[in-house]
Length: 166
Image (cartoon, rainbow, N blue to C red; front, side, top):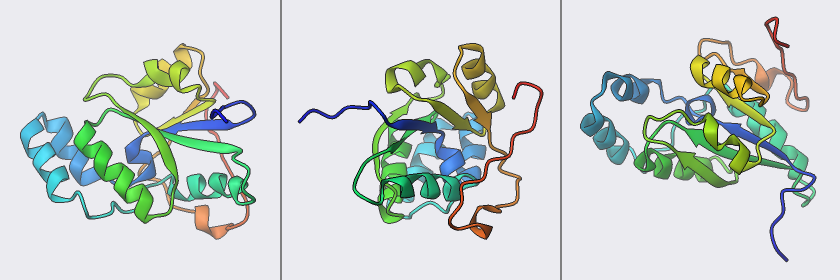
């Protein structure tokens, strides 16, 4: 039977929202492509630490616990394919089922939302969120500085929005 995305919530999330990649991101943003790729290769088998939206994603994926896939999480990242390998390995180590991902090597990722059939885009990159909203996609910026309060309510999905666009 072919795979279908009908009746599924598809959440596209940036790799930095799902995993704590702030150290790696500083190198990425400095323009040191070689150093960034080397660091990611050196850490390929080191699972990345949970990021700010990690708890939310785990909770959303619990809607699939009865064997019916209601939620799919896809990675949509400005990172490169080497980072993609680390993200998929980190996801497997955390028992987060990821089946699809797009890694744009620094280019804006929001243009892939339609092809991914995403219903929501979560990112730490404010410009990517603005562009996704401008293209008509529901999107939200997650702040890496935020307190990780998601584990305080283990059986509830709580989302707080701040802003006039809500």
